[in-house]
Amino acid sequence: MTGSSDLTQTRFLAIENSGWGRDFTFYQPRNLAFWVYLLITGSGAMLFVSRIATSYPAYGRAIAVTAVVFTVYGALFWWFVAHIDRYARQPTKLLVAAFCWGGFAATWSMASYANTALIDIYGKVFGHAFAQDWGPGLSAPFTEETAKGFGLLLIIALAPRLIRTAFDGFIVGAFLGLGFEIIEDIAYGMNAGASQFGANQVGASMSTVVLRVITGATGHLLYTAIFCAGLVYLLGRPAEPRKIARGIGLIAIAMLLHGFWDSMGNLAGDSALGSIAIIAGTMIIALSIAAGVFATTVPRERDFLARILAPEVDNGTLTETEAVAACADAKGRRTFRKAGAGRAGRARNEQLLDAIYDLADALATDRGGETPRVEFARSEITRIRDGRPATQAQLPVRI
Image (cartoon, rainbow, N blue to C red):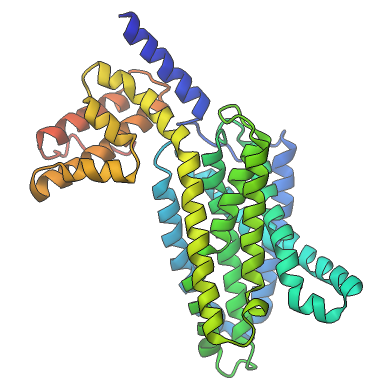
């Protein structure tokens, strides 16, 4: 009995330390961070809408095509980032807040002005030619990543119990970067449509659209995910001890990747083959670094999940093998799925993993209590393991 009590207490502490299951309240009129967020994001949104409204009569087709393409593109990336956040999942409202900060505040209210000012300083100090060639690569990494990172600081002030680990910073940073990337890409597509005085709007904008789509996976989404993971390490959080060297290192890596990307035209010169080689090489390196940061930050989340599920193994709801698979990396989960007999067995194991994550969500949301939602999640695990189909009465409204 004592052992079971200890596991339950450990579960409760894991839920509290991880922030798993907590809701996000955006409207906080007594929190200065709320008003700062509202002012800067609101002004950026108005600037963006004003720019679109002014340009739409002349370049409406380019804007429409670009907006549709990048909306679909952004939705796919949103699904992917939300999919890898399978542990202490962030509330959708918080992710929307991060996206909007990246898309409107960091882009239009902050970086657009800061980039111009910094490039002008480079021109005065090093000459116009230097500023034109190297200005973007020596300004955007500092101004844009700092602007997006400031969004993470505001979100921490708005949701201190939700941003608890470097992995949380990685996920929220990805949404900050995604917002920046999508809104910036729409603006680039609009500018490209105007490049031929509107004579070939769609054709002119599509070359920009295609390039941004191909390279988007290693763009702002990736830079800011790395940057914000480093920022959390630099600051330290209740569930993430401060690691100053690691934090500064990740912030510097994000800025270097960003700066290298913005300087590729100068580095490649006039060689088309050189440009392609640099683009491909940069994308491979950036994705490898991001995968390494993910692998570094996610173990703490898996440990929280293991502690939440431990009492379920003790009471017989889960087997040790099932709990270990749910807390494993992609290779471990794949091995568990393939252990099922035949296609039906593999599909059942996949459903079982999803049901285990749903149980963890229910337990976290209800603070480890014995509630109807938790009991339903447990019954679903038993039903899937037994191979029984769901009946209409068993279907939940939505957990």
